[in-house]
Length: 451
Image (tube, rainbow, N blue to C red; front, side, top):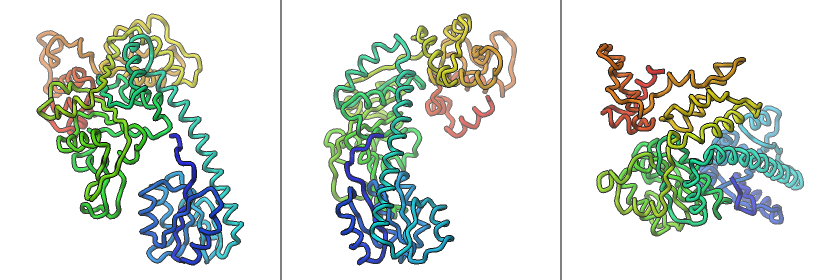
């Protein structure tokens, strides 16, 4: 969230070359770097390649009408302020520009001072928005860290988190789904010397194998079908900061080899690129599976040892039940807007006796659901636990059987087995689908019938 550039960047998109040079010369003393392009295609390519703060956009371009570019510019640089300029001023044109995302509207020919004032307003607006975002982000970050820390049960893990924050070595976070691996990664980053640089995350299980390589390393124009312009990868975007690779165990082997090379050499080569670019990125990886059991099979041994310079395990909530009252107090305060909602002692005892296969994430969801469904009465979130996934430790018999000799319908047996498998595997959909021998989409469709 923190801005590391001192100067802002103004991009001019206009086919009048003399006009562009005049504007560039006039703005020479302003606190902006001025870039110039003369077509819509080149302007969008520049927006895709680097951060742009202000765009001076002409209405009539050789290859497009200017207002149609506004959404595309904002897609690449959502904070950018677009100053729309046209030699055909009208109320209708101004309205169209504003509707498409323009910040200001100038009619050509305009006085140079009018442009300067518009630029100053745009830069001030950017700074104000930036300040508000940082305030909101700081509050969110403090809330997330409080949920992650949560009590004495994570004291040992927090010591390692503090140790990791003092170095730039790779870190491997392990633990079940919902234990706070993402929050641990954020805590390491924001307590490190890299806190002013980007924190960028990617879930390796959420992208198809064909996309993950281009997302990580970027690609050059024409590298493959559909690559109409060059694009930075996440390593370049995270330069001087941290890249968090969640579900690293799902990364394809050929991408693992390239990842190892980038970590060791600190050089990244785009797909289709002829040269490599230096990057300074700290890698934090996370997994909910035992990587040691798949080394040499689906996961490279050399990458495993490179990532686990420092390995931090986050224990499940059932192994730190004493933290549940602290977590409940904090979560209820956050969910209610600090209205002082508290759970009675007997209710906390019921929650502490549950095994929480979904860990802190499940606890938060149960409390939030209770607040929605039990308005006007004392909260009893424990009443909702019967509808949650069963505890992995509570299943000592065949999950398809009710405990005796009663026979069940096949559909009910399937539902119970899915619930049981989810509980055993910490709520991880990808691992559960593999264990059951079905596709991820099939599992998700069947889970809908459980709700």
